[in-house]
Image (cartoon, rainbow, N blue to C red; front, top):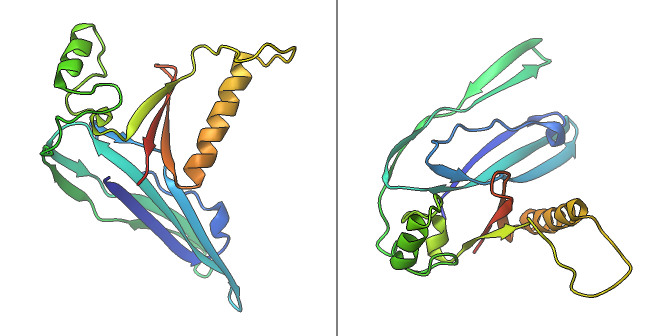
Length: 191
């Protein structure tokens, strides 16, 4: 699974640091980053490193550019603002040799063609659903499993589901992307 990561190190309260957001090509499916922070209390005060690791899935083969990321910070020793600039990256994504194997929604290319004919614009031959590690978890409607007097509104159930998925993402087990227009969570299992 392709990953893009960036790290910032230095003195100060690293926990409060806002990581720069890279500008990925529109043909990349990008998940919320996994953030890790290490902080050390020593004679110089607080020092540490904050790292952001993004799961990125190209939706098609081709050449892509990821522009340089910029990070600005205030340096109290010089009383100035400074800007750091990362390198830009050029990627050449090639079609995988196993790209026609089954997945969760479309078990083969015939299923993908059927879904495309039915008007499903998300059914593409390069979909990450074809690799068996990604699925959508819809939250349009909930049905009670047991008959009880307890009632929880559907909006609350969506929040509970979102929190469970967020906990699994923070534990490093999955990546989650919230699909507002499709009323679902897009989930990719980490290996």
